[in-house]
Amino acid sequence: MRSFKNIQHKLIPGLLVAVCVFAGTASAKVGATPATTDVTGVVTKNQTAVPGAMVTVTCKGNTQGDTTDGFGSYLVTFSTADCPFGSTVKVVAQKGGESGVASGTVTGVTTKLNLAIVNVEIPEYGLLGALAAGGAGIGLIAVTRRRKQQMQQL
Image 1 (cartoon, helix red, strand yellow):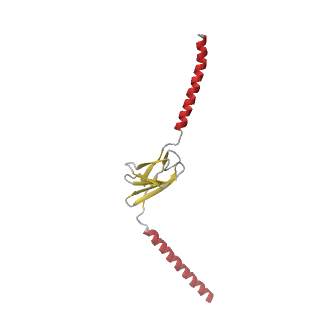
Image 2 (cartoon, helix red, strand yellow; image 1 turned 60 degrees about the horizontal axis):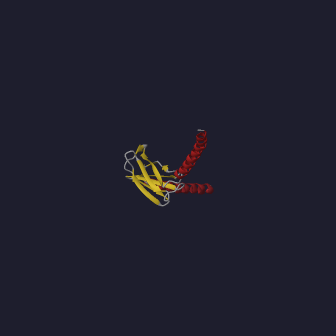
Image 3 (spheres, one colour; image 1 turned 90 degrees about the horizontal axis):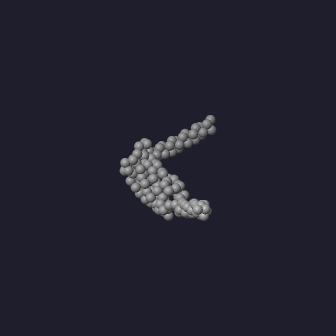
């Protein structure tokens, strides 16, 4: 009976060491780089989900697409070879004449990039505003020069 206890005292610690070593090697394999990278998020307009938006995600020249669901959510999956950790991801969402853009860095297995779409149908107002400001600036320069010339004549 005494020899059985000696075996138990040596066997149990040995088994514990074996289990720890096995668990360590198994966790090392689990901690390896995953085979895929997910990019997900929600597309909104005025803080409301936008269903049916076309979403294009680009990472290192590789492009994936999705359409938002009823909650405005999208999900695309890249292989880690196409989109490794540390890469920059660009997301473009479009619906109708509206669009939005977001970008970020892949920091893990899942990268979340939410974005809002806005109305982009009136770019001519920017051009008209620039032309009006330019015209006003030229007019102001002409008026200032004329006053200066009149002051010098006095």
